[in-house]
Length: 474
Image (cartoon, rainbow, N blue to C red; front, top):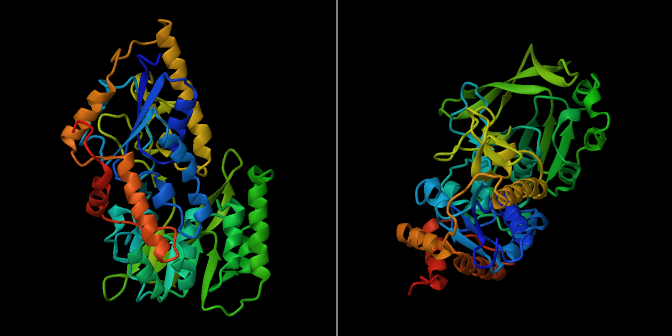
């Protein structure tokens, strides 16, 4: 690895995991590694842009760390490039010493119950993308104008995000970067109650403490917790959580809510536990009008961990909207091994492995949710990426001393892959093009007292990006 013949790495995906991997690679070298990042959208940052709730701007500010990586002289960004369509695995292996897949978990886990596909039933991924202005969900129809009660299925932070967005006051949303099309609908929403239901008990909920505590600070919504149901969910002690401070704090926060008298706010969030949906029921209009739920009990498995088991008790709740937030899974990539059960790329410490032999595939690596599954927070990806980068560096060192597999090409040309990409996708978006999009969104946001007004259409983004994206060959 020298400045004359650097190691070249391609990163597929521009979310936190991809940027942490790129940052680690560039820091580990002194002019000897170059990183190209390929992204399906014209815009970078992944879930920081399209997944973090708009009323959490401090979390979004982590993008400043990624901006420093993007400005590195040995880093290039190629947006509007779809892996598997515009460029193949074989193309990249011919131009890079290593490929890092950082494509995340793009779809939700289904409930697998009757009625799940009824109008009015939505995946959390779709609703989150809709209010965050993701181009894939811009045209989603969410009927907030007739439904008065919504059910959010899940007991994690995504479920809390959805519930909070459904009850925020219009003035609380007006200063955020919520997509304009969603702002308009949310401001006129008739939803007055949001039920958040989890299949296990309050001690097993996956909320983080700040997010759960934040519900009690909403200006337009009371938080309702039935003290009897809460204590019922705590009757069986979960020994695996004895040292879990977050779980203990969650229980304490929920107890505070259960003892708090409603303040008479116009909306409310109702926290429910030990409930699993068994069917979504259609009304006369063919839309979701109710949900049937089974009451669960907690029973220990062989390891002593408490699991939810359905009883014969059933409950029916009238609802006009249902949002499932029970987890995400990755999508398979063309030519790349995939574990269908877990929804991840099989790997050993970040090295992509052959599912048949278990052997590592030379030059191919993985980071983030597509590596480990949808667990942890944004910062978790930093440590995760470091593990993968350590594997890359170790493999390159082994190759250098002759003990590792020989990879091709020996001397990849940085200009050649750009020529290939521009020939196949003339409207690719380099980092300078993204900066034009960024400036456009921020300038429009400044006029309205908002962080930005997001472009939500690919063609709009490409039009703005083209103003400062000349072909280097011209």
